[in-house]
Image 1 (cartoon, one colour):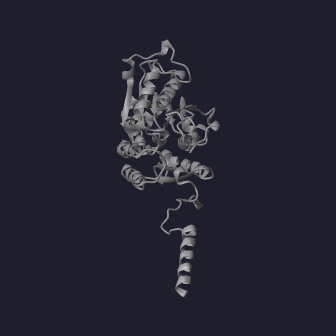
Image 2 (cartoon, rainbow, N blue to C red):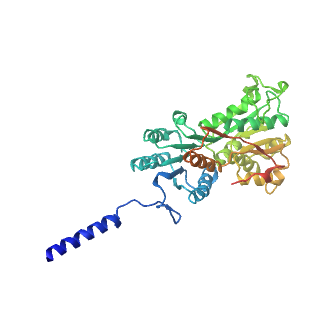
Image 3 (cartoon, rainbow, N blue to C red):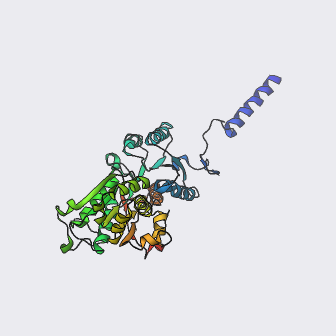
Amino acid sequence: MKKALAFLLTMALTVTCAAGCSSSGGSGGSDKGGEDTGSKDAGKHIYVLTAPEDHGWTGSVATFAKEKIEEVNKGDYSAELITSATAAEQITNIEDIISRGEKDISVVIQPIDDTVQSAIQGLVDAEIPYVAFDRIIDGVAGSAVANVKGDNEGIGAATAAYYVSLGLKPGEKVYVYQGDTSSVTTLRDQGFTKYLTGELEYDGKTIDDSAKWTEDDLSAITYSGAMNWSRSDTKTAFETLMGDSENAKTKWFYAEDDELAMGILEALNGGGIDDSTKQAFMSNKPVVSGCGGLDELYAVLRNESYQDLSADFGGIVSVTYSPAMIQTAIQDMVDYLDGKEVTQDHVIACEVVTSENVSEYPSF
């Protein structure tokens, strides 16, 4: 009788545990700044991969990504930020995501460089949907849910249109400070020249026939080579350029990033250029453009810094290319998961920021 009762008690405990006990080895939610996302559907998790949140344009991408992730985590989906200091680290992080074998996850990625292509192909092979941001790698672009980027050709076109509005004539000397050796720089170069030759419009308009440049005219444009988006490299390069006083006659300087434009201003504000050369350069009412939304350059436009120097310029402008665009990339993934139609080639238009309208644009 005792054996029978013991058997019945054991069976009752077994049934109870099967219905209500959980394994301590079960998967939990990722840490999202204290918010528990473990109860959310694991099939609705978005990994956002960027460079570290340190400084400059690239670092600001991560800052804006975190803002959007907080918003996402209040809704139907969960998301987390994974930063990578190098392309090799980013490749490892992608491989780790794939190797976990999680179901129905998705990725938003700002590739560090083009070497990340094989890892992104791994996402495609694993049937993990992804959105690419900023650096679009041609070899895998067709597999993306969306390729979100600013209008790099448009940046060049906007700059050229502004210069023409200030009196740039066909064949005048122009000096271009380039960012790096990527497609971003190539497109910013092409946009500038294509507007001048009439192949590309800006703001719905093409250059007047009387102002068009010929292929021979384009030979007046000099390219710096890769400045690696570095203010200090550009400052040094500009000081070296002005070491030849003949270069002080050049009026038009197209810097493909605000950091590069600031390098030019710092060089002119410092002691690395001969005073007589500097005076000759400034007497020519030079024009300098940047791109990106850096607050230091916006402060110049707001007349809060470099006031004496900027007063002698014929023009200082920036063209928009905000790191906040990462939020659009994340939203594209959310829309895709919601079953909405998403534009694969998602180009965000650029605008010219001047001292007259700078208050209308956010900076970083």
